[in-house]
Image (cartoon, rainbow, N blue to C red; front, side):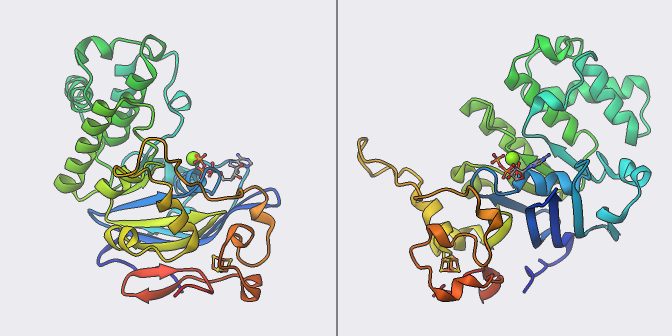
Amino acid sequence: MNAPAPALPLLEVEGLSVAFGRALAVDGISFAVARGETLGLVGESGCGKSTTALALMRLLAGARIAGAARLGGDDLLALDEGAMRERRGADIAMIFQDPGTALHPMIRVGDQIVEALHAHLPLSEREARERARALLGKVGIAAPEERLAAYPHEMSGGMCQRVMIAMAIACSPRLLLADEPTTALDVTVQAQILDVLRDLVTETGMGVILITHDLGVVAGMTDRVAVMYAGRIVELAPTVTLFARPVHPYTSGLLDCIPRLDSGWDEPVPAIPGSVQGAMDLPGCRFAPRCPRASAACAEVPRLREIEPGHLVACWNAP
Ligand SMILES: Nc1ncnc2c1ncn2[C@@H]1O[C@H](COP(=O)(O)OP(=O)(O)OP(=O)(O)O)[C@@H](O)[C@H]1O
Ligand code: SF4
Ligand SMILES: [Mg+2]
């Protein structure tokens, strides 16, 4: 079955698939995000997290995309490019995993933010400048006035990341796709940025899809979590439930990889044996080669089913 829509769905994704050539990088995933909700998207490198976000932004040239993604009455995947351009930034914005690709190297940072603001908001030049300055301050950039005049190459990677975050939230989008938004930043700045995002969610009711490898960030920031493996959602649950009662063997493995405060320094953190390599081509459950519970039933693709209210799992041998 599909993921249940939370009360007041802001975004409803149904059967989203993305193919690059023959390879299905995302294979029919369904989920919803409510207003004011933060949904975590987790899973090993290559499982399709960024591809999912980029598909929703319609920024995947050369990929074949199927399914539906309804945001405020429209199917984003069916809009023409002109209509999509109007929605990008205003309704749906993204913090990209690779900041290098998102900022124009030849345009001053301030001008880039002002341009993003002008694209969707009826502001005078002065109002837009003022707002750009305030945004830089909000994401923790010291001396924002000076930074407005800088080119991206004059700033550190962490600083560029913060500028990108400022641009993404500039027009108060209804849905923010945040792809590893704080990975490049040091812990103090990371905490500050996460506070900014949390405040925006509370103030504006923005929905967020938060992609991260950091399960501590997931625990602290998200309301629900979708766990992806090789292009599919294998478990979806309220965050508290997922951490307390993970059911899918892959989720259990992921959570076992979190270093514990009470373990000794020299105790190795267990990793899930095997690799996701080649899993996209497997018939049946793609986790089978690595799964301690695999059985003959696993030759069939397991579908997501609800095992308790709001807790969905795709596994034949889940308790
Ligand atoms: N433009 C592309 N062309 C071909 N294959 C691609 C392209 N972009 C992504 N892929 C493939 O799609 C799959 C999913 O990649 P994706 O970048 O979405 O993973 P991810 O979950 O974001 O990983 P990471 O945690 O490393 O960021 C991978 O197998 C990747 O090689
Ligand atoms: S369906 Fe089978 S192989 Fe897949 S996770 Fe469940 S038990 Fe393991
Ligand atoms: Mg990625």
